[in-house]
Length: 455
Image (tube, rainbow, N blue to C red; front, side, top):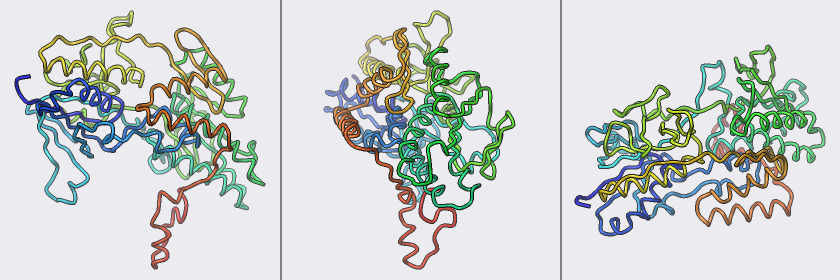
């Protein structure tokens, strides 16, 4: 290595964390000598293991065990908590807004680099639906997952204490939009949790609640295959979950969900999981994008047509060299992201040392999905599993994939304890407004919209 290399990693998710972790191992000697510097820019000081969000929402896993602290794992990297707002690769600079930027009043920081890794991930893809921004909640972060859990239990508390049948009906109606992994798993786990919690309410029964899944296409969970998708619909409907295919959400203003089939549901809960889109920072770069807004990449995970720029994961359109159809791209999921990060880290190290690059090649092995406690579906290596075996495979697979032995041990311990003791059904919605109690005691006025809880 002839010169000191400054590597900038934008994003601290799957690809960002695993790439930086791989570089730490591959460039251990260079980092020790000071020949290499790795900087990770991320909006959060942790990586969220998103497949565990549904279980965190159901209370099976503690929220702090769903995330991996980046500063502990990436101990040889410089971690900057902030957002990259634009990147000028021609000048090798990135504009970054940090937590201290507004306090300092000096404007955004400018970071210079020699090698760029773009792994900002994706954001929720929303539509211009009336009321969506005001009343809906997403399901991409641990904060949203725990907030949704608190919200669901709080709605049961409202239904239990109100004398107004309209308020009770709206509180016990839960609408989920999107039939992919996030929507189906979140709905399955939360319905399971709420059904269990209802036994502790004297006037709220499981059958009083309405759970509605809205999907615009004619199937759900396309990753597990058509047969398993139909099985999932059947199982959800057996649990009195209203699954509506070929249906869209047209409006949710005034806390009324209006569907394209004419149905109207007064509800205080609309969960939006209808897809994702590339991170906005990609459009603020001078790098080539495809028609979907993702970075055009090669099979070696370099940005096509440029040098010293790399990408993988949700932000990258990576050719699938194993696909029989020419021009196919790898799916933007965790299975590819983790494996791409390994190759990406290796290739950056190879590039710095003047060695030939490795081609990313991975045949998709299948998918697993949880539908609640002891319920699931799986389609792995051509084999189809249902019920408990699929649920058990789901847990084993994700336990093996969650980063660090520390997290593996803690998650396994929580699963073991949850099998021995009863579920926790406590809502901690006040955590979202921790100063409300003190402000009231100090002579202030409580918030009108949410005086105590999370609603």
